Image 1 (tube, helix red, strand yellow):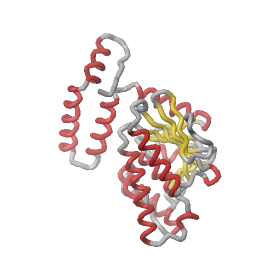
Image 2 (tube, helix red, strand yellow):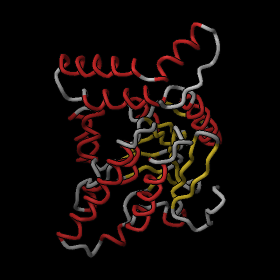
Image 3 (spheres, one colour):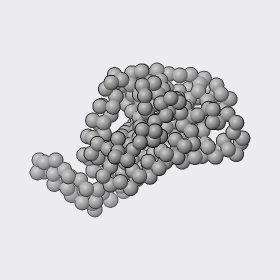
Image 4 (cartoon, rainbow, N blue to C red):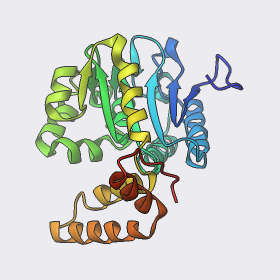
Length: 265
């Protein structure tokens, strides 16, 4: 926990060298996303965006039951049309900030990732999950649809038919199914979740930060464009990295058989 963090902070932050661990902290509500939690998460993301000491972020939920069990239904129940649209746009803005943070963000899914929690995971660069984790977009069981990007990101990740099956049934799925469909990249025993996620984050943090940013941008920009356009974007980004000090350091270190010391310049 950072020196100024307090136990009731809605989003705890703990730095381990170049890795920041963010913990969504509403355990009694299964970390459900309400407006104060979204606002605090947005503040944390702004902190991280300008913190040059942090190169990778791990996002998890407090407690043993939930990553995020969804948006806060008690808060949403009496929304009118305008308030509901504003809430959806606010959530989308926070998740878009995660997706475009400029630093890799890993979701460490420790329990239920339902509704807004599943959408939050989808906005991260990749996810590692506990064997006990559960996933789903059950909004239709409440008479609504996903509002924080779930209809868009899930279809892009697992395809239209699989996404519509999840969204239209509202079913909850186990960790094995999430792994099979590619929502998560690895399953681990619950007690190993954070150690594994943090170890991967520490390894990523040794890589060139400008190269990682360029890689994220090219993957995202080429996701739904013709292959030829994506390849042009890749070649352009590849070339631009050759004017950086990190490229010179990385290749010199390789030839000198020593670890590279990247500075982000």
